[in-house]
Amino acid sequence: MANLGFVGLGVMGSEMVNRLLGKGHTATGYNRTRSKAEW
Image 1 (cartoon, helix red, strand yellow):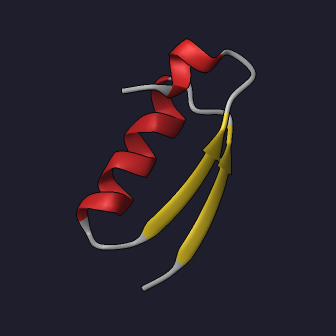
Image 2: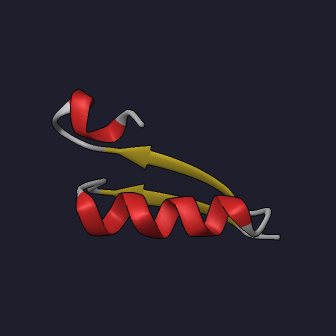
């Protein structure tokens, strides 16, 4: 599986990361506003 990094975890970015995590990939994310990156 892939190790991925994401910058910008708004509505679209967080949904992409959720789908990738569900498929077994690992992801590291960054967002300027911490509360938007926590789910």
